[in-house]
Length: 606
Image (cartoon, rainbow, N blue to C red):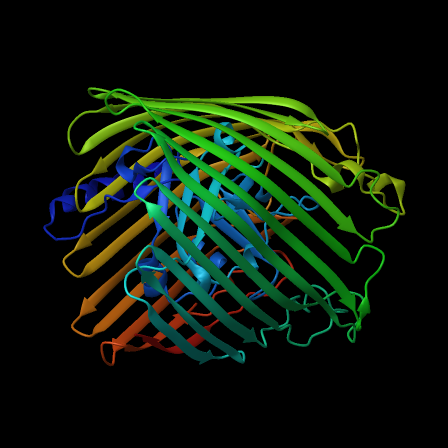
C-alpha cells in the first residue's frame, strides 16, 4: 500500500507542473500502436517514443542501455556489452515481447528471443514501444508488447556525419554516415564499429572454475535506406541492416577455457506505398530477417549444437480505408515463413513452418468517445489456427484529460527448441504436442496531455495460461502479472524531465512463486538541461530485489551523468558516466555488471 501511496503523491506533485510555459510539444505521431499513423495522445495502448534527439542526448551505445529507463522495461544481461540480454516488459517473459526492425521480425525461432544486445544506436533513428498485449495486431510473441526499432532515414539536404570516442575497459567506437534528400529520393548510409575489452562475465566468487579473464566484444554494423517518391500517391523504398558481433564469454568448465561466439542480426526489406483511391492507402512489404549465432570453445566449433540460424521471410499487405469523419478501417494479411538451420544432433525433425494471418481493425471517434477493435487469425503449419482480439475504449473529459480501457487476448507460439530439440538425455527433449501459451490482458488508464507535458497512469492485469515449463516440457503453469505503471514527460524551458515507476506482482500461480529476474518495483528519473552551448543530463535507475534461480539479486540505485559542449555548429564533444557509485546492478545471478564506466566522444555533423 505504501508503494501505491508514493506513486499517487508523485502524480499529484507533477500534475500541477504541467501548466509550465514552453515552446516544446509532445504531440508525436506513432505507427506501432495500431499499425496506422496516429497521434500519440490518441493511442489507447500505453505507448512510449524514443526520438533521435533522445538517443543523441543519452549518448548511450546500444539498445539495452537506452531501454532501461522506459516505463515497464527491465533488462537482464549476462555480463557487459554484447552479452546475452533478456527483455521483460511489464513482467512478461522475454519470449513474450515482439521486437521489430523497420517492421521486420529478427527474432530466433529456436530460443524465442531477439538479440537486442547486438543492435547499436548509431544505426537507429527512433524506437516506439507499446506495452500490453497486442497479438491481435502482430500475432505471436506480443503478449507483453511490441518494440519497433526504426533505422536512420535521409532528411533535408545531404550531409556527412562522423564520430569517434573512447572509454575505460578498453572501449572504442567510431561511426560515419551520409544521408539526405535529392529531389524525389531520400537516402541514408551508416556504418559503425564498436569494441571493448569488457570485464569477466562470470563472478568467480560464485563459479570459481570459470576463466577469470576479461570477456570482450566487438561489433560492426551497417544500415542503408533509400526511398523514391514518384508523386504524392506512390513511393517505393528499400532497406538493409546488418550487425556482426564477436563475443567472448565465460563458461564454468575450467580457468583456462576460452569461449566465444559469432553473431549476425540482419534484415532486408522492399516496400511499396500506394494511394489506390481517395480513401484507400495500400502498403506492401517483402522482407527477410536473420538471427544467426555460432559458438566456439578454445578456437573450435562447440559441436554439436554450436550453430543456430533463423531466417524469417515475410510478406505484409496492409490496407487503410478512411471512412466518414475520423474513422479508419484496417485490413491486412501477413505471411511468415521461418526456416531453422543448425548442426544440433540429432537434427530437428522439422526445420520450417509457415504462418498465414488475416487481420482487421477499426478506430473511430464519436464525440468524446473513442473506440478501437482488432481481430486476427494466425494459421500455423505447426500448431493450427489461433484467433485473437482487442476491444478498447477511450473517453475524453477535456482537451487535457482522458481515460482509456481495453481487454485483449494473445498467444505465444512454441519455439523449435520447445517442440523438436533432442538432447543426449531424453528428459530434456522437446515436446511436439505443445500448444501455444494463451493470454488475457485487461487495463485501465488515466492520462493528462497538453502541448507540453504528458502524464500516464495505467493499471494492468495480464493472465497467461498453458505456460510451457519443466522437463519434460508441458503446458501446465499459469501466471498473473498485475500492477500500476506511471510515466511522465515534460519540458520546462530548456529543461527536459522524465519519470517512470512500475509497481507489479509477477508470479507463477501454479506454485505461487515470483517470476525470475523481475522486480516488484522499478523506476527511473532523468533530466537534461541546455545552458548556452552546454548540455547536462542526469539519470537515476532503481530496482528492488529480484529472484533468480532460487537466489535473490540485490536492490540497486544507479546514477548516470552526461555532458556535452558544442565546439562549433558542426563539432560537439560529449561525456557519459555510468553507475557513478559502482553499484552491483547485476540482473543475472552469477554474472558481473560492468560497474563504473566513462566514455568520451567527439562528433561531426555537416
